[in-house]
Length: 169
Image 1: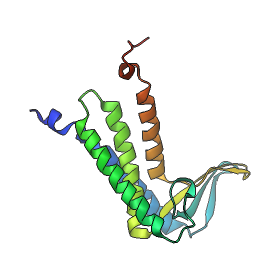
Image 2: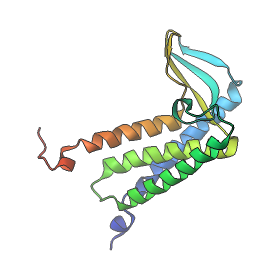
Image 3: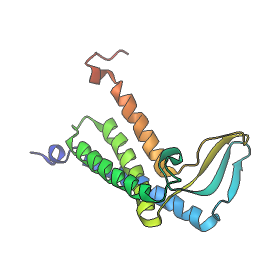
Image 4: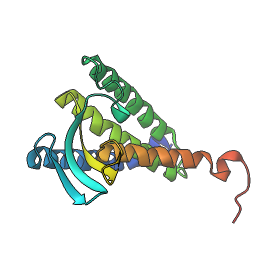
C-alpha cells in the first residue's frame, strides 16, 4: 500500500494549519491593537474592524446563556474535527477539491475551538455593513475558512462526476 493511499489526502492538513495560524495571528493583533468594543472604519459605510466577543455559535446563537454552551460548542468542534480528519484520510487521490474544502473547515473549526477553550469566547473583528443600517454579524478568519470550505463542499455535491452524469463543456 502506497503512502498516498494509506494517508488519503492528509497532506492537505497544512492548509488547515495555515487557516488556524492566520486566524489566531489576526485575533492576537486585534487583541493588542483595539480595545474591547472599539470600532475602526476601513471603508466608510461598508467595512470596519471591531473588537467583539461571541460566547455563542454562528450569529451569536445561545450567546446569552450562562456558560454551558462554551463546552457544548467545544465538544461539537472536537467531534466535527475528528470526523473531518477521518474523512480526509479516506479521500481518493483525485479528490483534491474536497480535501481543500475539508481542510478549510477544519482550520476554521480549530481556530474557534482554541478561542472557546482558552479565552471562553470567540474573538470576532470583521464587520461588514451597509451604511450602518444593515449589519452582517461580526466574524473572523476562522469563520471565513469554515464558510469557504462549506461552499466548496456544497459545490462538490453538484459536480457532475458525483451524480454519474458526463461532464458538459
